[in-house]
Image 1: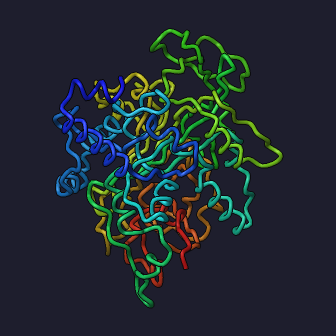
Image 2: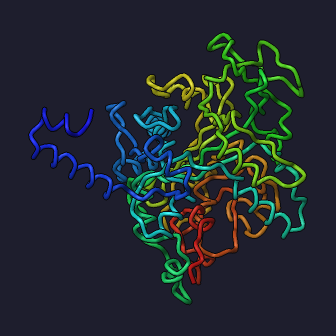
Length: 478
C-alpha cells in the first residue's frame, strides 16, 4: 500500500508517529558481534539472545541452590541429592527455546556465548549479549596442554590422545557468567595482571553464584553416509592407563535416516567397519546439529595440510560429552555428561543409581547421556583452605571423551599428595584439576587430590576462580 493511501485510512499524526518509531528502532539496533557483511545480512534471521537456565520444569530443583544445603549434602555424603541437582541443571541446559538458527530450533545451552564471541564483545567495548551464528567448534585446548606437558616430561605425546579430526568442542558461559566476564573485562591481560600480588596469592573477583560454564564436545561425521561410526565408551580399564577413544575398540553406528527401532538395547562392536542391527541407533538419539558452510570453513582452517579439508556443509555434529560447572559453592559444582549406548545402565564413572534419578521430562536425546559428579575433591569433603589428604577417599569424576586419554606426562609437573601413583586421566577429578587454573601461561594439571587454595603453588600467580577457560582466552592488550 502507498503512503498516500495509508494516510487516507490513518490520521496523519499517527502515520508520522509510526515513521518516527521505525527510525528510532533502526537507530537503536544492537551492534552484531560479527561485523562481516554476511552476518549483517543474516542478523534479522539469526539474531540469538542467550537464554538463562530455566528452573520451572522440576519444582524440587532450585538454581542457584543455597550453598549451605549443598555443603550439607557433602557433609552427609548425599550422592542422591547431588545426582538429582546435576540432572536438574542438565534438564535446564537441554530445554528447548524460542530461539533458532537458520530455522533450526536451539536448546538453552546452544544460545550461550562462546569464548571467541565474548572476546569480540570485550574488544569492541560492547555490552550486547547477542550473536548471529552458532558458536564455532575448536580443537580441545586440554589436548594441546596435555601433549605439551607430556613432551616436557619426555613422555610419548601421542598415546591416548590421537583423536583424529572428528572431535571438537566449544566453551560457553551462561548469561550471568558472560555478563561477569564482559563487565569485568576479565579476559584482558592488563586486567588480570592488576590482580597480581608479589610474594603472595592474587585472585580475580569471584564469579556470581548463578554462573555456569560448559564445554560441549562433538563428533563430526558426514551425513552423506547412511551410517556414522562413533567410539562407544566400554568402561574404565582394569589397570589404569591412557584410555582415549582411539584405543577403546568399541563402536556404535548412527543411522542418519532414523530408521532404527527406538529404545533398543545397543551392543557396541569391536573394530567393525560395518553396522549390525544391535550396534545401530538413530541420529535423534543424539543432541546434534547440521554444520553449515561457515562452520565447515572454520573447522577446515584448523586442520593441518596433511589432514586437508575434511569438513563440509551438511555434515552433522553429534554431542558426545559435556562438562558443566556452576558457581553455587566456592569451589564450583562439577558434573560431566557423556553419551551412553544404554543410558539406563551407563558404565563407570556413571552408574545405574545415577541413571535412576534422571528427570522424566528429558527429551529422548537428552536422556541418552550418563552423568558423573565431583562436588568435592575427596571424601570426606575438606575445607577450602587447610584441609588434608590423610584418611580420605578419592572421588574420580572424569569424562571418557575428554580426560580418559591422559597419561603420566600430563601430571608430571605436580607430585600428587593423595597418591603418587595417580598418573592417568581415569584417576582425575574436575575440581582438583581446575583448582590449579591461573593466568600464568604455564599450565599444571593434577589427578585427583585435595588442593588447598592457599597452596604454595599459587604464590606470585593470579587464581582465575577455577576457570581454565580464562587462561586460554587471554587478550594481550599491553
